[in-house]
Image (cartoon, rainbow, N blue to C red; front, side, top):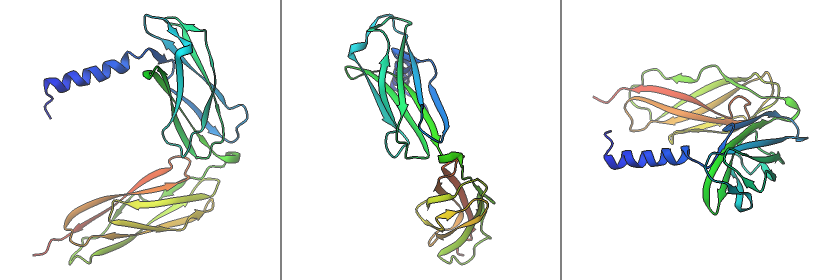
Length: 237
């Protein structure tokens, strides 16, 4: 698509505004890694004043903004810095993890002054009690039906998997692209096999079709995995 002159100007303004934020994080992302308890789980996020002017700390506000969690996981305990942050000086924001209820979490720390956006950094990690990790492994992530003649209206299939982790795998839901419904056993112990059966409504459809199928679980590697179903439905003469 050809960009107009106005579009190019707007893109430049947006990119420039983010590249010229007053406070730039030393590291854009802090990763807590895998957490099994909450003892002394703290981090310090360092921001550098990249402007040419001092910034008064008393007028700053720090906002934790939840991205992926079911609820907020971190709390701002204190701001460690001088009253005035001079150019090229460091603003240190100390955070402490509390009451994690989600398996994977990610949150942005936003810095604002009088509603003006000045900088941000990302904090993430994963919580697994006692260091046990469930892992779902599918036999295949692509399911192919044979060529379909005389459209039957519904196709049925099954994705087989194994829990190759060391803790019980729990599937929250399995959803297709509108016309697919999944059926599954909620819990699969370590080392055991499982199945996700599905029905695919194809009534009125013809030609080559591919649909995505999302599986939400407590899998350590990826809590939301995608698998796909494929078929070719021969059109009526």
